[in-house]
Amino acid sequence: MKPVSTIRTEKRPAIGKGFATLVILACLGLQTAAIVNEIVPFEEPEFLWPFLNYPMFKQAYREGEPVNQYILLGIRADSTEVEMQAEDFGLNFGTFRRLLAAMRKQDSARLRFYVGLVREPARSALAGLRLESHPSLPGKDGPVALPPVVVSAVRLDGQEPVWSSHP
Image 1 (cartoon, rainbow, N blue to C red):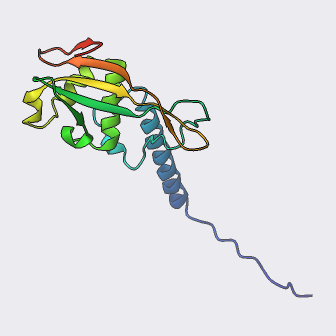
Image 2 (cartoon, rainbow, N blue to C red; image 1 turned 90 degrees about the vertical axis):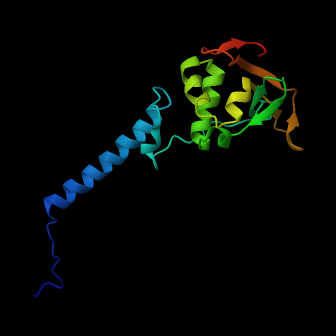
Image 3 (cartoon, one colour; image 1 turned 90 degrees about the horizontal axis):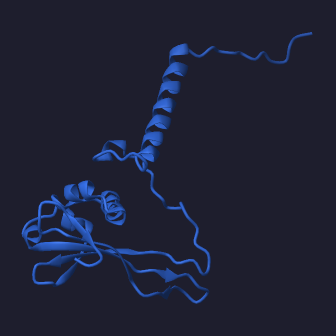
């Protein structure tokens, strides 16, 4: 009796498996570095792209829990206020988030770095910064705005940032 079919087994070269393993380990390492960057930040972690720690689904909000939207206000020497965007600092959105985190944590060293990036003539006219939280409550009929809260404020008129309740 003849066999109906014979199954051929081809051995793959060990080099291909080793290379695939190295690529997978490199990807896992870069993704781990992107996550660790939130704990121990690098100066400019753009080299980690496309491995990002983007918090798209990091936290769920239930009805009754406030959702904070942070607004950074620049305060000029004449006490006028202007909303500051990532473009004013020459930053992308992810790096601008780290600036907002520096304001929330009152991290003077990181703040000095980011303020140094503000483009002229805005930098020379900038006397302070204020970070406000504009919370809203998700509801069945849409978001309900709550009054804004000052998270932190800093005066920038000297070499060292001076944190206060109001700049």
